[in-house]
Amino acid sequence: MATPLTNYINSYLSGSITSDFMTSAANLLCSLTSTQISSVSSATFTSSVSTLSSINLYCPNMASYYSLAKTNSNYGSTLYTSISSLSELGSVISGISTTDIQLVSADSMSSITTTALEYMPATTVNMLSPTQIAGLSNDQITSLMNSPNYASFSTSIVNTLQVATGQTVTLTSSACPSLIKKLNFFNILIFMMNGILIFI
Image (cartoon, rainbow, N blue to C red; front, side, top):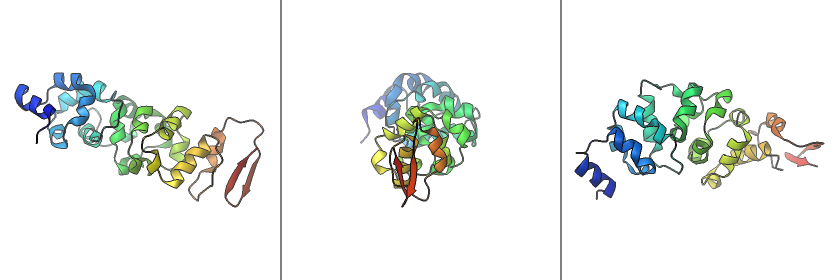
């Protein structure tokens, strides 16, 4: 059964998704199907980036918009290597693939918006390395810890995030000691015993 949004597109836009519709639909763009998104022209996508980048809720079809960005000449298939693209695409980056997220350099991680990180699927977040997490700002780490998907984060990711915020955690083999430098405490005494970090 067609959704009201699809009925509107079919009835009033002759089935064609226009730039005017994209820029005015805002969060409703999360209701489009992958087939509808794939039909969006490159020019229409380009003019709609400011709207898509500002979506501030979990968007189940954001992976389709990310795929559209990769075929767009303004961004390209390796957009994950571009600091400007990561920043400009904003929330669209929450749809980054599990393969591409591993190719984002630690230095570029700070260009991903807090909203994109907050609503990034757990399967994607779980692919982050400790080195990548070390490249995040405090606000970005907070966004990840406030994510509605936090309960589905892997133990190693949760531990690494907790180390980054100065919490006492049980270390795993993938926890990154270099993250300790991000702690904003004075007179921290760290004991490494049985894989436990103890902060006094």
